[in-house]
Length: 484
Image (cartoon, rainbow, N blue to C red; front, side, top):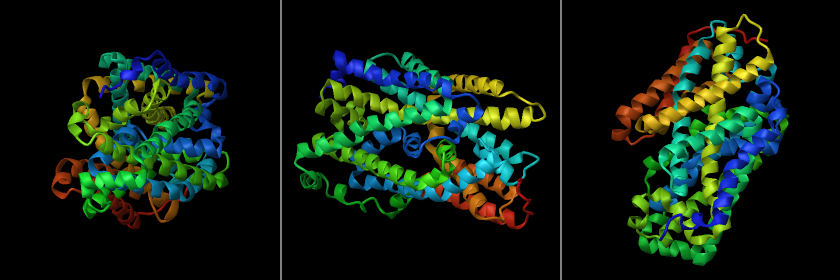
């Protein structure tokens, strides 16, 4: 089976290129709407429920969903569904029970970032939370962005048959241009466009495949003949299942996801956003799983995949099933999924440096104009993007090693802090700092030394111990009054 054979077709190539450059057009169109720092970081708190729902989902689903989950389903069978159950369930409640309270609190405190909120909530005049949080965000997010650039470059390199470095530079260029112009508004609307593109890749694609094999029962019957365990969702064992479900614990701590709740124009609309977002999460998750199952049906042996890589099954099947028009869109959709995470994370880096460090710590006694802050935010996006490009090029192994637990590190450090700050009034500044540090350290130590012997995903113990640290330290320290 020839891979990427149809991308040489002029129509496929044209459609693919259009999907790559569409974000730049959106960035240009949103340029005039981005007038100040609030617009750049959270869309001026004027985003529609539909945009917030799809943007929150898209920003959290990178190439891991499109390529990773489909490859996992190809290898593990139906049991791969547990990898999406955890985050879908958590994010459904997160829209309502975390998003609503966070939206109300951040507007009351005039907070533009998560660290803004923590500082105001705990009246942290020494700015310890902001400093510790900035370090944690910088460590995990920059590596996260670099890994997305790396994945985008590899996809582009293979699709266009060009060397890795030019593909990496093109990937970075496509993201940085529209981000520098439009900021959060451009990112949010681009996420909506990408979500629509993914309808083809993760809805129409598996539906067409199921029709081609004669329906779900025919698919499962063939899979059972190949490997009976592949159609048993419990065949992985409870240890693996708990580990997969535990992925959802990371969702409340992802700054690039929770900032979406802060941007909605009316917190009462978050219930509708929850319905829209959850539906979309379910559709995308099951779509990726079915593509993997269909892949095992059509390509029973992994030896027939390029480089014997299960994650290539998405590309192999799309090349087999579709003509130039849809194939160009599907390949563009893979790249779109990668961009939707990278751009959101770049925005977090910019807000951390400009808002949390420069404005609130280094220049806290100086009045800075909105024009200057907006200009600086754009420059930080640009230079942090360049740093991510350098990391992606010279330290690929380190970048991917870090990104494996970046989700867990952010979830343990910030997810626990956010939940306690919203739902336990006795939480103290010292407790939050202790939780952030504990979550980060346990994530790293468990990943390095304990994951292999225990088989337990590092986020689960890190999340539990961070909660314990917040609770214990808060009980023994005095809770300051929140700033009003």
